[in-house]
Each structure stands twice: as C-alpha cells, then as structure tokens.
Amino acid sequence: MTRIPTVYDVAHAAGVSTATVSYTFRNPSRVKESTRELVLGVAQRLGYVPNASARNLARGRTGVLGLFAYDFLWEAPDRRTTVEGALPDGSEPSGEPYDEFRLFPVYLDEVQRGFELECWRRGFEIIISGRRGAAEDSAINEFAGRVDGLAVFPRRVTSPTLHHIARRIPVVELASRGATDVCSRIDVDNAGGIALLVEHLHQEHGHRTLRFVVSDDNADSAARSLAYDAAIERAGLPALPPLRQSTDFAGQLTALHENGDLPDALVCASDQVALEALDILHRLGLDVPQDIAVAGFDGILAGAISRPRLTTVRQPMSEIGRIAADLLIARSADIDLPNEAIVLPTRLLVRESCGCTSV
Image 1 (tube, one colour):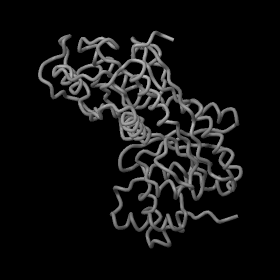
Image 2 (cartoon, helix red, strand yellow; image 1 turned 120 degrees about the horizontal axis):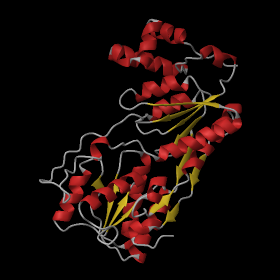
Image 3 (spheres, one colour; image 1 turned 180 degrees about the horizontal axis):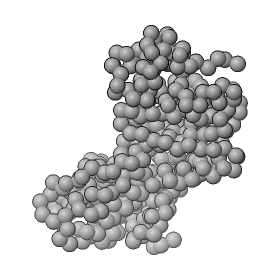
Image 4 (cartoon, helix red, strand yellow; image 1 turned 60 degrees about the horizontal axis):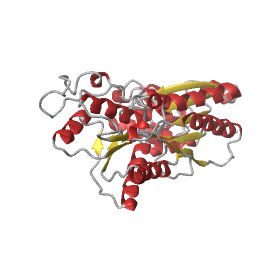
C-alpha cells in the first residue's frame, strides 16, 4: 500500500513548521504569501491532503462521503433600484422580498436529498459542507481529507485543486465546467432543454422577442445561456442582450416596462429567477402571460404551485444526487474503475406562465 504523506512530510520538505502547514490550509491569511505558495506546491507534489482523520484513513476507508456545495449562507446584496419612483403598488423595488431574497439555489436541496437517500440505502454516512470566496480551495482541501469520496458543485473551486484531490479519492463534479478524465461528471442536457423551451415559445405561442435572464456564475447558467443563443439563432429571432438577475433585476424590468420595451417572453436560467420575475411583474401591474410570458429551468416544487404555475424545463435533481453517491461508492471500493461522464435528460413542462392551459 502506498504510504500516505503526512503534515510532517510536508513540513520537512518545505522547511517550515507543522503549524505553518496547518495554518496554510486552515487559516491561509495568517501565512505569508510566499510561504503559503511554497507549502501548497510541496503538498501538491507529495499528494498530501489535509486530513482530520488520518489515522482512520491509514487503516482503511472512513465509510463517509462528502457533498461540497457553495454559498450556503450567502444573502443577496442590497439591490437598490436605479429607476426613480415607486412601483405602481406604491412599494420600492428594493424592498421586501428582495432585501432578504435567498440566492441559495433551491434545486440543490433536491440534489442533496437524492445524495442522502442513496448513502443511507448503501450504509454510508455523509458530511455536507460549503464555502464561498477566496477560502473555497482551502476549505475543500481540508474537507476532502475526511471522506472516502467527494461530490462537488465546482463553481469557484479551481480545476487544479479538484485534480489534486482526485489523486487520492474519487471525485464527482456536478454541473461541471468542461471535459476532464480526472473526475467523473454528471451534467444535464441543458442545450436540449433550452431548445425545446425556445421552440415552444416561438412556434406554439408566436413569441418573437425573447430575453434571457442570467442568474449566477455557475456552469449550468453559462451552458443555458449559450444554448439559448444557439436556439435563438436557429429560429431566426432577434438576439437581444440578456438581463441579469443579480444586478437590480427589478429596476431592469421596470425600465423595460416604462419604455415600452418589454419582450414577448422571459427565458430564465433557473426557476428561482423566474419566480422572482413573476413577483416583480405582478407588482408592476402586469399580467403573466397576457402581457408577457415567463419560463424557467429546474422544475422545483415552488414553480408547480406559483400563480400562474411556471412553465419550465425539468431536470432530474434527485437522480443527480443518487448517481453521484453510486459512482463514489463504486470507485471508493475499486479505485481502478474508470471515471464516467453522464448526461441526464431534461423535459419540458408546459404550464400557465407561457400561455398554455394547465396540464
């Protein structure tokens, strides 16, 4: 069995104390940048992963799988509108509910549930963690040392960090950023789903002016934006600049309404963005879908009970979590199993927000 490098090995090779190595991973701001880079370089060369359970791992597996997401506690910044005056109901666009609007993607709840259920079914414990900002790489490095396998929404985690971790334990990327043979990947058919949605809005309802609403900077949102551009081009529709939910969304929609520039339909990168759009449009005194159609992507429960009910593209969220756990369990038992790249299908759910009769 290959000897697992320890904190002492890294400290000796880097010529620093074990405390410096520990601070580099747990509290990097306390370590001088040049020293931090030296320690990280040595750790990567040796294949060292910070490990709170080193003695357990030395004896074998922990029986624990990890799910590393992002922005667990991220509250939205204050979105002060750039449009003068209040909305027609007399309220300010930056007031409730937007000052307390949660940016945590609700679809992660369903992915997490699928991951938990499969781990429970197979007798594995789970640990769930997340961190945002500059400390994300350090956080996931430390987290990886406590588990037999790791499922991760990569977002701001750098590829070298994931590749470094994948040298030691199985890693599955969820909503991956591109092809890699180092980790397994689970994606959904974003392109096919967006194509069906644009085709439906255009051919079934005759909508010609569509605006895409970008959400955050995750890989799925980027993939859906590219797919939307391609679908619009294929349909011969005008390519209008996207709206951004994170930048005074209420102000953008208010300005379009006041200037008479509202599109026929909004195609939103997620259901959460679409539900926010429904609320803003309602507060502007507009009727959905009579004045403007709205559609989302994900298929979260809230979209099925909104008024009007939300037309969306359903992705198999729970199945993503289940498959991720299954891949990690298989590769933790046999590290020689090849990594897999899985693309799960999506399907169009037509409801009232696009103008269809409830189905």
